[in-house]
Amino acid sequence: MALTVLSMNELASAWLAKFSVALSDLKMQSLEGLFANECYWRDLVTFTWNIKTAEGRDAIMDMAAAVKAGERGKNWTLKGDAEDSGDGVVEAWFNFETDTCNGVGHLRLRPDGRCWTLFTAAEELKGHPDPSGSHRAEGRPYGAVRGRMAFGKKRAQEKASLGAPDGQQPFAVIVGGGQCGLAIGARLKRMGVPAIIVDKHPRAGDCWRTRYDALHLHDPVFANHLPYIPLPADWPLWPHKDQMADFLEAYVKLLDLNYWASSTCLSANWDDGRKEWAVLVDKAGNQMQLKPKHLILATGLYGGPFVPLLEGQEQFQGDVMHSCEYKNGHKYAGKHAIVVGSNTSAHDIAEDLWEAGAHVTMIQRSATMVTHIDTQLKTVFAGCNDEAQARGITTDKSDLNLATIPFKVMTEQQKHRCKEIREKDAEYYKRLEAVGFRLDFGEDDTANIMQFLRRGNGYYFDTGASELIMNSEVKLAHGDVQGFTPNGVLLRDKSVIGADVVVLATGYRPFKDIVEKFIGTDMAAKLGKVWGLGSNTRGDPGPWEGELCNMWKPTAQEGLWVQGGNLSFSRNYSKYLALQLQARYLGIPTPVYGAPSQRGEEYESGTSGTAPYLGSC
Image (cartoon, rainbow, N blue to C red; front, side, top):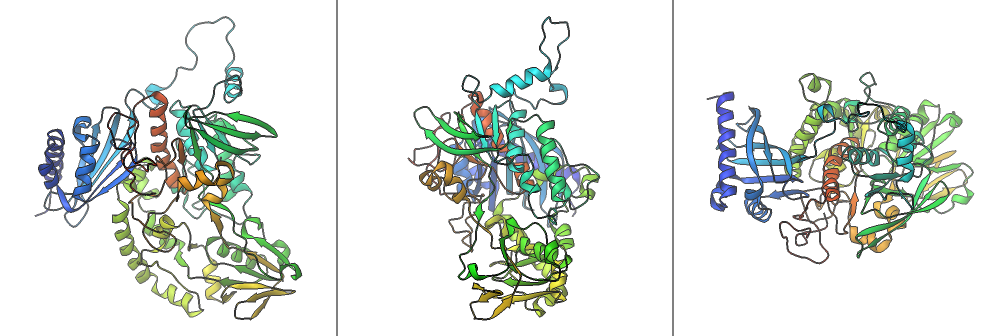
């Protein structure tokens, strides 16, 4: 018999009531019985002051007891109507409170009424609502004030004072002013936390502005909004990189962020006695010392470009460049071009060179996951596209929907998606394989989404280059490049391919390579792995932790945080990073459950201690 809305609401409400009672009475046997054999509780900040997924009944019981969820959680109430998501699974949203947070949650119930996935997330700290709408500042209080300082002058003084030797020190310094740094900077400013964004470029947005001319974003416009200010509604589906650059520059101005352009972080040293950082910054040629309590690394997930040392390069008579140096193919019309690599930048550059009239050869060194852009659009972004928004699914709601899915469950979902796209686009893949293109669907057939989450590379969303390869308009070769001849490149098999220009789309060095330049090798090692799930697949060594390694949450180094990801992940999870820092700024106790620890101290509720070391992720 089909479930009615009323019966689903009653089922979800009854589960929440039983859950609340079991937590309050610490009846672990009753609590255990509420969860299915396969079960997950994912918490974003509310109980754990962390980003943490407990997998299985034992882990859930341990977490519930350690964080004293029964004492702290209350007012568990259904939010809206429950829904049947298929296969008899009932999904429901709910509101709840803790001693410090107002929260939102989500649950999925199996047909037997037991919980498959539970999700809890902080919406805001109690007593500190978002300063918008009815909570907005007055701006200019009523009444005349003799000698009133003009708004612009007052704000200029405040900006000049923040970080000055005789002024206020920032609570946080954000290194990196691309979309990741701006997202967390905007969140912190909105929450009243003093922060400075430090970026090496002369203008905000230059991280996009300086990329190759042909670059369009590979995620659709509705997935790329920033916090508080969405991208314009009439922007194209695939925005150009210059549009994104100009938007970021406008974003800094509109939100009045404390943004230091042409500034480089020279060093950052932790003072464990004072519990603060000593951050030396070159600000447009002037060295300044900052003393923040927290340092946020928002430099991206990679280090500098990886440029292989190839023998004989000095004798090559053409041009050689890394893909990060490539601008356009205008000067190579009618000439022979080689692109080394077969991931996103390699395909984009090969297509651009072909459009400019060059004769292009792509050297594929390893197998690549290719997804047609239309297939990617339909199978990944259906939850946030224009149709979803027309149904009332806002960007914030879409972000929450995605966050409710534990990464282990997502892995299984992506296996189904991979099977679906291989069947749907079977002819497309046959054509690619027919010309010798080597395809990679992942070691466990989970396709590009898990490749992104596990190692951040190995894929291409086909915007047209694959058609050129299928039609042999872009030639394909295989193997590693051994070196150069005067007029081309030499492969390991001793074959030579003639070239006038060689673009090395060979990727980037690890994240630690860039940050250890200013935090040092010991601190970078202490931080450990950044990004990846610990899936024990290529590029993502174990152990499995169930969350992205060291992202948006406490790390092994006190006061050190990492903010990153694509525009979607950066937008969503910057909120939870900001809430953790806002609580610390306000002096609210933030006992962390499940955080890496160098000393292995026990978790104590109501203290600022950390849990026993549970791994590097």
